[in-house]
Length: 440
Image (cartoon, rainbow, N blue to C red; front, side, top):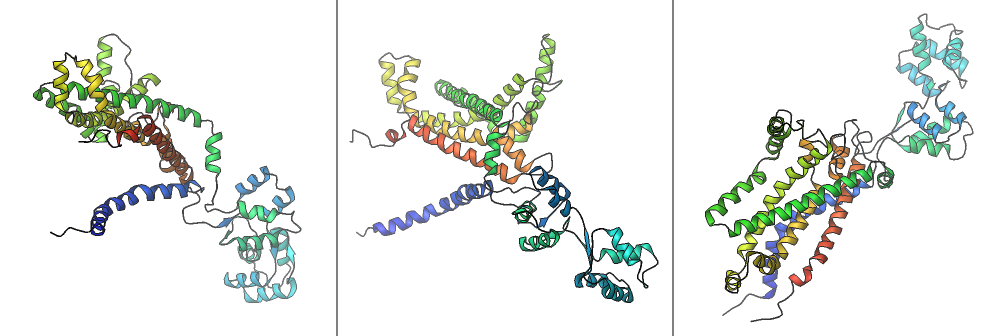
């Protein structure tokens, strides 16, 4: 009888693993790599994602003034000069200026320069073939105007050449400083992480995130475990009914689920009317106070997570050898003793998985908060993932900061990996996957 070689078995196993590896690469590793790349850039709506040009604007000059660039250089950059050179003559011809007038300019004013349009136009008026209309005279003068203000340069070399031509004896490093500051595209930087450290809202958002994750995770795991154990001891008919009932939050579309919570908690909603009938404070419980807003956020996310936990815990409970439970009953064990000494030890792996999965899920989740409180009232329920989403993709100011949002997302990935390692050590994962000490 022929048996397959280990080499062929390895190839077959590799073939079966290939689709999973492709999905893992495409949906996890590649997004993480791209996020890591974007996190070290200043990409935004203003810079674009494909590079930019060099432009000196009035706002840039004010910024450079605040950064200490000397007043003489700033003043020179903000002014225009008029130089009679071959480039200006070509521009005048292209603008339709009379050829005879251009010839007179070339003969009488060649290589001269003027610091203001008034002085240049006054000189043009002395030429015999000057145009009679003021508009034509200004068109002719504009062809010789030289300025770096609001002119778009394609490369750094072009703007540095223009700056060198405009500035006489500039201070050391001034041209390089202006050229660097005038770049409108994205650049590599670590400023995103520095800005997050010093931002006044950072620690408040971190506190919100920790509060949200810890309380919602406790609700998910404890309530899910309680539901699974409770339905485990119920008759099969009752167990199936309650299991399906608790699945509803999980299978309900997110938008519809959020609308249901709004109907439940907003003005004239279910809770509002009940509180009004009982003489209790009646208001918009979703956004009317910080405490009620957090309650809605935690419960809305908690019921979804509890349903997920109940599904996994229920499946794990059915895998426990029923003979152990029968033997414990013969020994007179109570339900609580069965749970403590038999069920919970068998549930270490499912609890580890649900805890780890739900932690990572909660760290990156924001859709329920966004659809219900939108991080309010104010920003009291804004968590890190929601702030990253708003920064990168939904900024009301119109300037989406892709780089800063990616930096916030990358921090979430790092925190998630650290917590996963902590969970593996806390639940002694190595012991759970080790070989049994007794082999049959």
